[in-house]
Image 1 (cartoon, rainbow, N blue to C red):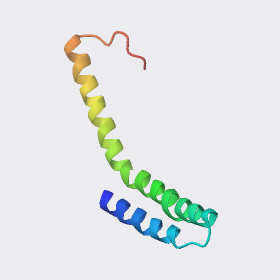
Image 2 (cartoon, rainbow, N blue to C red; image 1 turned 90 degrees about the horizontal axis):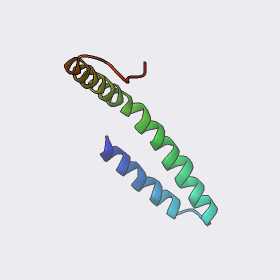
Image 3 (tube, rainbow, N blue to C red; image 1 turned 90 degrees about the vertical axis):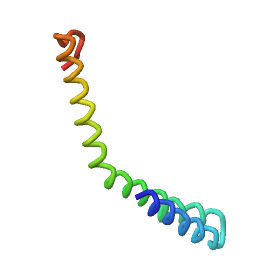
Length: 75
């Protein structure tokens, strides 16, 4: 997934470098590069975030059961 992100940034940097002025270059990089890439990484990172949350909850439950009580936990 990160290879795609790096490749996309490379392409958009080259696109921005060929623009006629600085403002057009910055807008090209932000609107064609950063914004879609942030959306892409957020969407494709959702399954991993879900797995991390479930793993964290499993660890919290295991620790809570070993302690015998859930004292101090906000629920």
